[in-house]
Amino acid sequence: MSRLPELPGHSLVYSGKVRELYAPIDPSTGVARQDQLLLVASDRISAYDYILDSEIPDKGKVLTQLSLWWFEQLTDIIPNQVISAGPPEVPDAVAGRAVLVQRLEMVPVECIGRAYLTGSGLAEYRQSSSVCGVPLPAGLSDGSLLPSPIFTPSTKAPIGEHDQPMTFAEVEAQIGMPLAARVRDLTIAILGRGNEIAAARGILLADTKVEFGLDRSRPDADGNPTVVLADEVLTPDSSRFWPADRWQPGRAQDSYDKQFVRDWLTSSVSGWDRSSGDAPPALPDDIIEATRAKYIEAFESLTGRVFA
Ligand code: Q0Z
Image 1 (tube, helix red, strand yellow):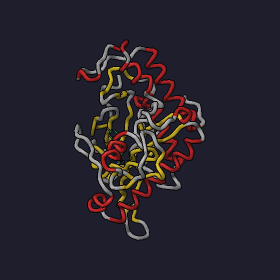
Image 2 (cartoon, helix red, strand yellow; image 1 turned 90 degrees about the horizontal axis):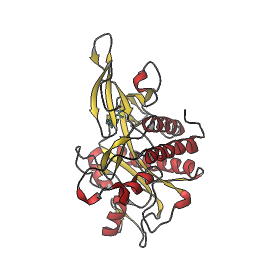
Image 3 (cartoon, protein in one colour; image 1 turned 90 degrees about the vertical axis):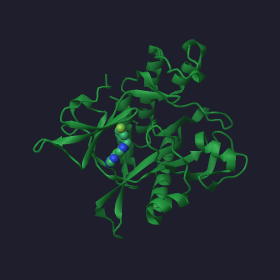
Image 4 (spheres, rainbow, N blue to C red; image 1 turned 180 degrees about the vertical axis):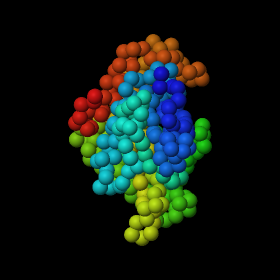
């Protein structure tokens, strides 16, 4: 359904696992604009590194609206890419799940902030007692609250390859000290603001990946290009959301949004063997509906708005 990437008046730039990127075509010249992008979120969902055959109705809208709300909560920390989230810039065909943004020169580093230890950060900690060169105290386990949030950047690997952790010194060597320090501090500030807001709503943000872009047409007082918040921010696709009332360090945490999907896929009733290499089966309707309800619940609890 939202699989066909044909969008009148737009040229497809990139089709990702769960989103598409378009360039608007200038009607006066018939040429794709170089200064803008339309980011379109689909209803596709991934689990265990597979894109599932089943879609979650309204997932693209919920995540787009949540990201837009977060951009507003963060404007005192950082300016954002958003030009318009409504008509006529956003076509009716993708209403609610697309945003027209300023095309930026992307900072070529995956900026990850972690408030809790899990995933690849935990694996690295178990090997080295540190993550991305940041030393950590002994005795931490899966899901532990970190003494303070840490910046754990990674390389932007080519599609299909896995990102590699980087030290701060490597980020500095790649993009320079002033920008490296700026994206580190911004990443930590964004995660901090996110957790301040989410904690009051029963959600923990374990970690997050943020993307920054440079606006070279907007030099700051020191002559450096303005750093702008890009892509999506603090959504369940870019961050680990955990239900606070079930947080229990020492075990894998429940996922706020995908727990029903994971539990069903790995239960005997799905008939799927994760280690078989086979693609997972389509989800039953009740799992799809329960998962849709979790995305909407996250949106409504965080924003205090009704999802419409
Ligand atoms: C985002 C992505 C996808 C959505 C490039 N403001 C920007 N300027 C330049 N580039 C980007 C952005 Cl957000 C950009 N992505 C990731 C892929 C759909 C976002 F398929 N890649």
